[in-house]
Image (cartoon, rainbow, N blue to C red; front, top):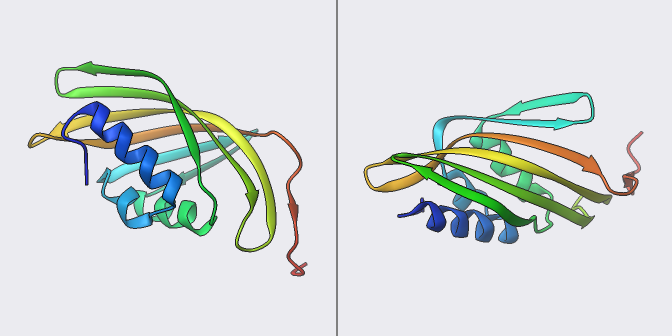
Length: 133
């Protein structure tokens, strides 16, 4: 499901995040891609498979808007803003936002994400409806 163009990759990413489609998300990354999320002073690393499952598990659409799309031969960079808000499937109230820088590469005529650097912040408090201590 990768994009035939860098813009096509952006469209596919936007759709997969809005739908919470883990399979579609996985297909946009090379298997060796590394995703790094920084929230405050905490840093998380994930594989494309783990990140896709976690994003889909939220049960909430992740909205994105593109700031820039740059193509340099067979390499590209996408800069975007993202946000997610609502109650997750486990009862957690989220109101998060941030930005991301994605490095992309063209392989056999299709574009894939090779790395993703995300920064996030709480727009409001996070509270959990879970009864688990």
